[in-house]
Image (cartoon, rainbow, N blue to C red; front, side):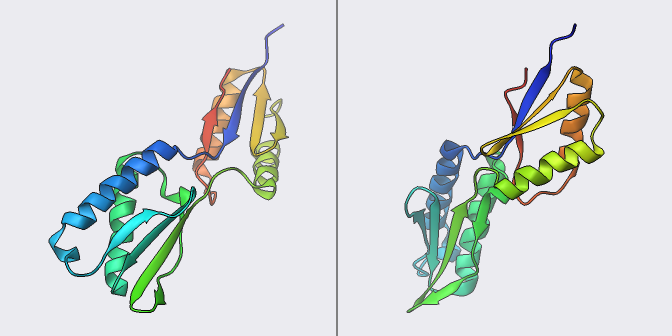
Length: 164
């Protein structure tokens, strides 16, 4: 009798990598010539919120672009950052960037249904909080489920953890 193998489908963000990317972006914004005199800044505001400000809309969008470049270089998916549209507040423009983490109940159900409907037979799914556990007797079937989920376009970045 073969033992059952499994893995978890999760959506997590490496906060240390995001913090490093934010620090690099802040350093670049402070040093770049095209940001001089624009009062461009980027900083944490709480645990999950990144605030970018500048005195012009195109400059605050450029700050967002710098942050996105640094995130990609550090291996953080841009799906994890939910950036708002630039809003004017007095003399400056502001963009709020929220970090998205965890699978919502609806998305977990959607993933489980997709695996049941289109995945190989014999694969079982279980929703556990903000993760979906996928189990099967065959590791090949689990690999095909991972490939199928990578091809789908979800609104969050998916990771596969706890592979046994």
